[in-house]
Image (cartoon, rainbow, N blue to C red; front, side, top):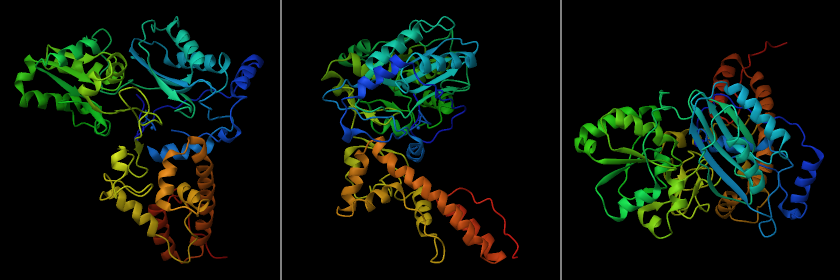
Length: 468
């Protein structure tokens, strides 16, 4: 899946700005014609995961400034809801650049503009797909993908969840990567991990069989929920899994004779982690087919809640989904991007845009504080954040209550203030440059370092100009 937490993107490609044909425009217009005027807003980006990485919160908010005015929040009482799909497959792709162009052409000519959003990762070892759209557009996209003649996507296993009334992604990205999940090994094709179906896993749980569940997701994902008695692999870089697995088996040699089931959100990480375990002598290592999301989909209510504690982190604006696959009430801390449960949001340590229980005493939080106090009285005032601008427009309400309201705003509503913040930062950089030029040579260098380090502005690549 793609990352909401900070992550690097090797190559970001967006669909072109071609307009759909007249019939497609009319279809889109008919779809939104009955929307409430109060629901029309400017669109805002999600995480990161990337995706993103798992998509960070800062990247989510900054992306909103370029949101399209065509985006619309849907009236759920009169219009169909969106559908999210995810799928992946390890299969050879000879020319990933050509496939990317082919996909871009499909999305820009065969569907209404921005009808499908999300990310598609392409690698010579396969593809990872996470998309959002209305049901008809999703079905058309699925049909196109499984019928591609230059890549074997015929047996793609799509996992569907309710997308609510807003897109969970700002736009469509089609990216090229070395691996669709990075472990510095590309020998998965033809060496696929053996699978255990959700129903079979549930049978083992019901019979209380002696086996090991190994959660191979990142720590921030595991913090929201996992299977009861699961071992949480303490890794944040997936490349480290083989080393961790060797240490785990050295400390627990009996694991080599036990059944081990690796789990992750959709199954993609367990493909490689299970192969790594088998390379280390675990002949009964299996992966949960379809991941946690497929387990939620297949297992009946009551049983899955008994076996799984909490929610499942996802790499889009929903942050997490419940066992019934509905969106959770979790949010991301805007400072450290750690996902927070509703209970953690009630703690005194959580203040929107300031801190949470995970970062209130961390170095990241200290740097945030230093930025706030770095100004002197003669310097241009630091531009306000999007949240503080929102507070200025609602001075009749308590700031703590506004913080809770801010978390519930849509991409479009936040996007208005994020766009204002971006413009204010541009003006601030110009003003601070003029201010620094008025200082002595000695003060110029020290103050330049100060503002570059502590302020939310671009690096000030300027030189002291000689006095005329």
